[in-house]
Amino acid sequence: MNTIFDQEIQSALRLKLVQGVGPRTFDQLVARFGSAQAALEAAPAELRAVDGVGSKLVREISDADQINVSQQLKICRDNEIEILLADRKPFPKLLDEIVDAPPVLFCRGDLKPEDELAVAIVGTRRCSNYGRKVAGQLARGLAMAGLTIVSGLARGIDAAAHQGALEMGGRTIAVLGGGHLNLYPPEHADLAEKIQQSGAIVTESLPTQAPKSGSFPRRNRIISGLSLGVIVVEAGQRSGALISARLAAEQGREVFAVPGRIDSRVAMGCHRLIRDGAKLVESVDDVLEELGPLPCPVDLETTKKIKNPIELKLTDQESSVLNVIKDEATELDWIVQETQLPPARVLSTISVLEIRRLIRRVSGTAVVRI
Image 1 (cartoon, rainbow, N blue to C red):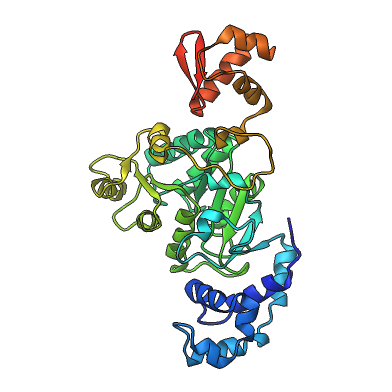
Image 2 (cartoon, rainbow, N blue to C red):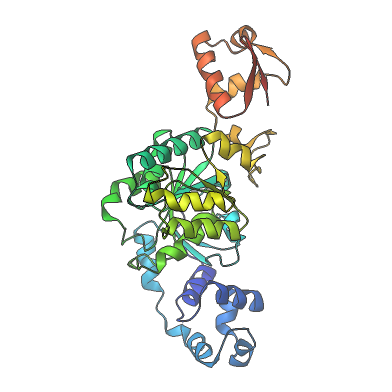
């Protein structure tokens, strides 16, 4: 993890800490002056020319040199928290595209190019056993298909989604409503540690900042912004998960909802979403079919031509089997002969490749690449 904070990171953090500078104002200032450092050095008259910047904010920006950022930088360095800036790798490309993207992210763990293939799974904290089971099943299936699972580390559906991805050895990203050193809920500390090892935990909040009620709705725009689509598993009529769904639609993401019992309060929000046009989800296939051809991650350090980005997550054995399967019917006996693997291993690997929608069976003894 990079804990070296250059001048632009320090300037961006200083500008973020100016009272009255939110994501949109930050973006306007950087767009006008070219960088956070240039915005901090701009003359009052130039600052007043920026839309939404009044006299009070001009004074706050002009006095920003009094803000002590060294303490925050030390906290990040001591706790292996990386500071990510918009428009700079590894800041997530999908998130950078939304209107009010956070200008600064605090990250533990590692964000990778393949995380552009991400789906969010969200829902109520007070979920039913059915909801917890479905969230886990969907997360496991999507992780097996090569997608990263995004959620909010909350109790209930969120936790089940993270755990499902981890069970399959998949990647998962948690988005916090507070700072890394003020984890909420506290009983998810062990889960957070596992997520950090198999993905990343991100937040726009300062490391020691406590979560507030208003920070969770704002956190939801990051959950949807990181994802190609958002699946709502269970949600009451006033659930925060519905905010994620609304934001997803506004961001041009796909919206999915899992139906429940008609007499269940936690199903009412999902049923409303389905009535309003959300895709009804009964299986992982419903999600994969709606997403269609997945975009290939950019700037991958490989020279191999990959037909499907999911191939990046295959094991050596899965890759060896896939590489000998052709675009026309390929007999299983021939695959065994070419790979020199035991027939039982070939059969089990074929099943995995089918689930990941990389091949399909054309007969009882032959398969073909999709």
